[in-house]
Length: 40
Image 1: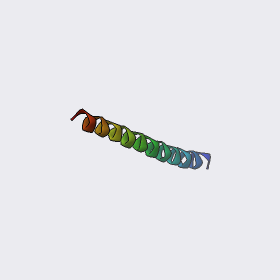
Image 2 (image 1 turned 135 degrees about the vertical axis):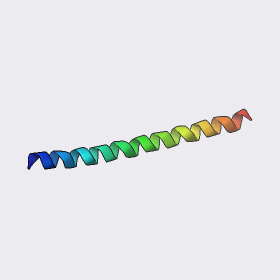
Image 3 (image 1 turned 90 degrees about the vertical axis):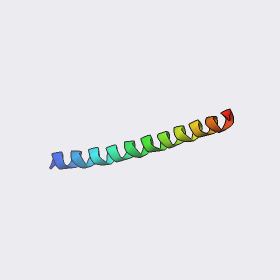
């Protein structure tokens, strides 16, 4: 029973981390695009 609970916790933890990483990457991409616009 404990193993199944841990797997569920791991899955939700991984999903939360994935969402945060995706947001960070999106922000990074926006910054890069802005810098490229300024450079032109």
